[in-house]
Image (cartoon, rainbow, N blue to C red; front, side, top):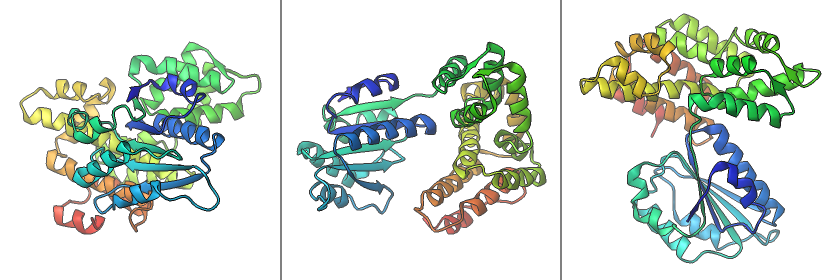
Length: 349
């Protein structure tokens, strides 16, 4: 299977489409945009029908093969989208993917969307089986040193120019959240009249957004200030902030903290562990304090709770994502204890 970079995707989609595209990674904005580009190219080339499947523990893998073998009366070509967040299809899924790739349908395009793959997945039978069947697009995080350059490119794509101080200001504010950067750039398009973003304009935009800020919410929860965190969450909801963006910020912190906690348990110095986990230097005092009360077992439970919220957002679980976000924020702040039994009952796995 050919492996391409994200900047090569557009050019590859101008030719005849591959029968299979596999997008993997943990950057929601870049993954979404890559999938949007593939879907658009597919529609332009006649793939007018789309079947979407979310893979969980109860997924029937026979649906993949039956979908590949059936077309509606109104379409000659079909796009099948398979969302596999864990990147682990299991034994049944592995056999189904092998069978699918052994007999690729001529009138079907398969788009597989997964999270970041670990080394174990790349050595699996199903990974090797689909090698050569299509194109793999791994999405890598934008490292802090490259973030200003990425922001500058996004501004140019939006028809904007900005001085370096304005770009650095935005990079510092979002701290790696590409979705937040894209939202700010859309806001800037509405505020500028000449296409130029000065440091003063950027500062005013940042100030306007500071009242209820996603990262401010996360910081309040980590600080243990449940009252302020809940107030920020309600403010974000009222202002129209999307639940996935809030969940992304909270989950990012929990994952980094879990990684650091594991290293600390193994005897590593907390500062070194947090640096290795990708926690920014200016946040290490805050996160270090939170790690003293949020131990590994609790962090794992909180991440499990976050996974349930993600399924609720995607319609895979009958629950209110906002109610669950409120519960998650309170638990991160330490205002309510967690137990494995409560988590299982709450998420109804």
